[in-house]
Image (cartoon, rainbow over all chains, first blue to last red; front, top):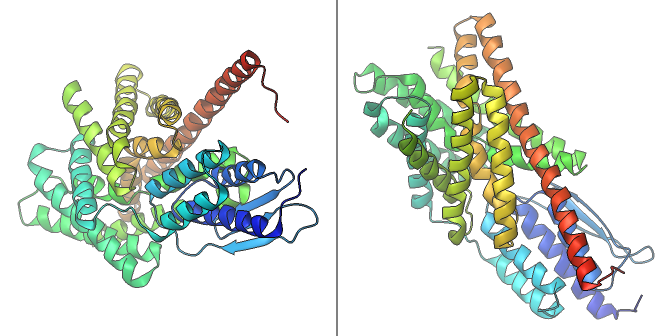
Length: 251
Length: 155
C-alpha cells in the first residue's frame, strides 16, 4: 500500500465524512452511505478502512493504526437530489475523473445548498397527490376539490409545525387532526359526500414511504441498528397519523 | 375499471410524490412511470385473483425491478425511483378502517383490518426483498461476464 501524506489523508477523510454526512442527512439508506465511503476510500489507496454508519452518526477508521474520525448527524430532511449529486461526485472520484481537491470542493458546494423544490410547489404536489388517491381509492368525483384542498392544507400544516417545533411525530399528529376535522366539517356542512375516502386521500402525502423503503433495504443489507430505528420511526409516524384521525372520529 | 384513467392518475400521483421527496428534476417522468407500472400490476392482479396481499407483493416486486433498471440507466441511487412507486401500495384505507373500528368499539372488525394492513406491509417488504436479491444476482453475473471479457482482475 502506497503511503499517503498526512495533509492529503486529512483532506481525504474530510471528503469522505462530508459525503457520508450529506447523504445521511438527505435520506439515503445506511448501507449506501457505507458503500460509497468505502469505495471512495479504496480509490484513495486506503485498502483496510472501516466504516460504521447509524442514523445518528458516522464513524470512519482509515486503517488499524490511524486515529478514527467521527461525525454527528443532526437533522434529517428528505432531499433525494442531494443524494444523487453526492453519488455522482463519488462515482467520478472513483473513476478518476476528479482529483480529491475537486471532489472536496464539489461536496462542500452540495453541502451548502439545498435543492428543495419551492414550498408552494410541494404543497401543490401534495394536493394533486391527494386528489389522485381519492379516485384511486374509490372516492367520488364530487369530492375531488375537497381532497385537493384538504391534502394541500394538511401538508402545509405539517411543514409549518415541523419548522416551529422540530418534533416530527407532533407535526404529523397535528396535520392528521387538521385533515380529519376539515374532512368531517366539509361533509357535515353538506358539501362533501364521503369523509372516509377524503381522509384517506388527504393523509397519503404524510405516509412515511421513504422510511419504510429505507428500513427494509437496510435490514436486508444486514444493518439492523439503522433498519430497526428507521422502522421504529416509520411505525411511530404512522401511529401519530392514526391517533390524529382517531381523535377526530371519536367525537 | 377505467384503465387509462387509473394509469394517468397513478402516474400523476407518483410524480407528485417525487416532488415531495425532492428527486432530481429529470427523473420526475420516469418516477411517475414506476408508480404507474406498480399500480397497474397491483390492480390487474387484484381484479384477476382477488387477493390484496399477493397483488401488493406483485406490485412492489415490479416497482423494485423497474426502479433497479432505471437506476442503472440513470446511474443514480435506486431509492430515488422506488419511493414514489411504493406509496400507492401502502394499505392506507385498511389502516384507516382499523382505526375507525377501534374508535367505534368494534374490536373484531378492527383486528381484521389491522391484520390485513400488517400483512400487506409485509408483502411490500417481501416484494422489495425478492426484487433486490434477483437484481443483485443478475448484476453480479453481468459484471463477472464483462470482467472476463476485458481480462480485468480486482486487486
